[in-house]
Length: 184
Image (cartoon, rainbow, N blue to C red; front, top):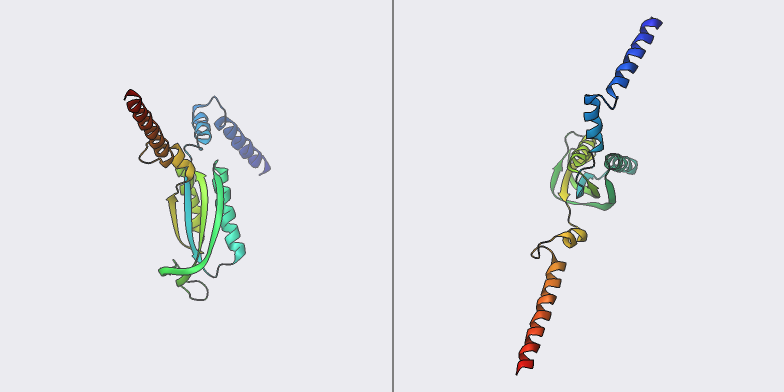
């Protein structure tokens, strides 16, 4: 029995080394996919609706799990904001009733998580959140930041660029008026 286990161990070790060989084509594909996980970073706001009677240690564990998933895949968690327990716009229904028989919630705790990550990481975070039974709803929004406005090249969408262009147009008009006045 021990010889069979040793043979199995060496076989698994050999196949693992063969698979992770950087010159082997299939391992190169896997290593390339791993290094390309970062991709395009998008600024997301994830709004969570959580049961109002959730213990703080469970909320902390959920936020840690979400943060670890984002950071593990090369993202950044900018912040977590607890909006507190508020009246829900309508009655929220949980997937399953809890041990006290509660299934419908009129008061809900709202929490926002602000993160920079790629779309694949956002889907991974969504899976982590869906697995928690305390979360009633989740909404992922592509958040806007001041930096997004500053980086936009279209003057219709960028208020800073629009302001600079208006100032340049005003300066140009003043110069033309001065030239007209100097001619007379």
